Length: 422
Image 1 (cartoon, rainbow, N blue to C red):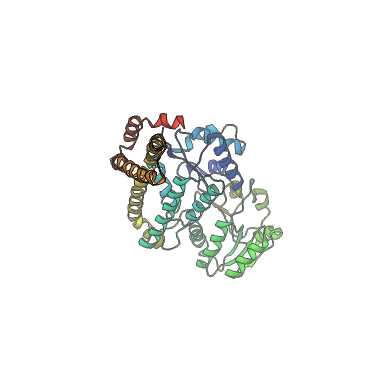
Image 2 (image 1 turned 90 degrees about the vertical axis):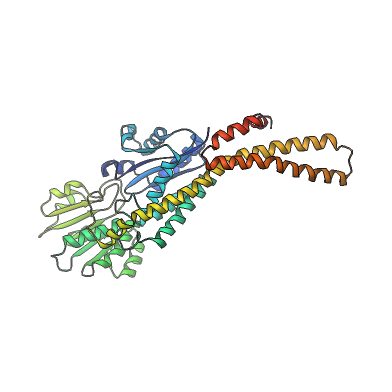
């Protein structure tokens, strides 16, 4: 039975943020699950992608392992009833659908804000995590490098990545619209991880804003602040900084909410206080909206206003999809040839074994010169014998008949018996 490339995906399209934050995996959990996949199922190709908008597992195996993988995720997260969430997962059981989904995710077509460039870097890190654990074989290596090459084509040949229509920029657009009547709005950014740093860089689109940033590791906040001209607030003074701010953007990673209703109820809110929660799991209690004057947005309800950049990206989608289709077609041709490669190697080994046996049988008493001549002749004969089945196998790939041809040649030359005898 041939291995198939498969995938399972829980994303903003299939699950609300409350479910996504339960399933979300950190680097340590991803590492642990990859090792379990290797140990329990002998997987050689596996990739786990977990972001604020999606948790996905890609793998190659002859069996469909979605339920088992979801149970592994539950085991890692301490969720005994994880199977209750199985309906939130989209399952891709066939090669083409799984590969197509990976390309669409990697290019940003499935992002909450279409074309979000962050996903490309997140996919690269997921691939590196697999490679570090020897969980990326020839197939996954080739597939991922094809994904990265396609991303370059899209950047160079389309307007899909033009402008700044990312989730982070969508947050900036939201802040701009809600503070339009506020003179020099005071903004506090809590957490400068990947998303927080991207938000900070996009603050240049709010030139009138007074921006302060705080982070557990102050040196990182200072480095970003120095580059962008912002003020740094020591993390232990975060509460006082929140009291002063008109807008609080939180992208801090914690298992429990960092900003609570009890905390916010202590603030003296003159007109309004806007909270933007970009964390998954969420770092701001939803009940803070019960406090008069508080407005809360999270990653699910941040909607980017219609912008020129977004319109350009949407207009480029057909061109992007065409490039993906072309690339997948080329990759599929390589994959089909890779599928027949083991059979070709077995056939070569089988014929070489026969050749060596016959040389040993009939040339026991030959001279070195005689042996060299016969050896050369028989090698040439073997290559000519091999040519026809190899050509037929490659032709069968193009007709999508590779499996039938593999079976036929294996039976004809009894290749399975030959392998068992070795």
